[in-house]
Image (tube, rainbow over the protein chains, first blue to last red):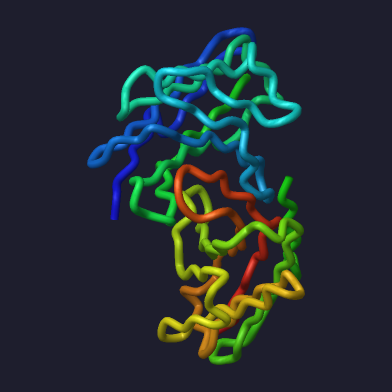
Length: 115
Length: 113
């Protein structure tokens, strides 16, 4: 299967700071990547669809100015949580898929803790 | 948009028994239904999927059934083992292209040795 990596795996930051999470497709070109957020004991909620070379599409209720997405190449998408607050503490997971697949391949996730 | 409901939220079974998880979806256009297993702190892993032109699919101890008319699909795990304990998510999407996936609410399965 295809491989998606994510970095960092864990990050702890102070309230008010910004945190950048990277998502990379290692063995395929990803025109589109998806960013999910998962709170403890809850499901994965799609935050936004990241499109290479164009603006991301955000789901209803997700603040685009708070969660900045950049998809500057076919293998890298970044999610920046700006002015992070404790309520942003969550598990952030990206996914993508090669064009010929139905299956989504997920990154290993990033555990964000905002103090 | 698509809405996927999943039941039960928790399920405890004795080792060796079967486990069944049920999901319903709202968008009749959805035609791809994956099931994921997620262990604590890890990424979801695809365990089986089914497309809408198929009513049932089986892979060893795992099977999925789909009733497109009723917009229901179910996961069946037979001869459960302790290592099957995890959270399971159903999902629905359109196949092809870069279609977003809508997840169910999850079922925490506990297999008691």
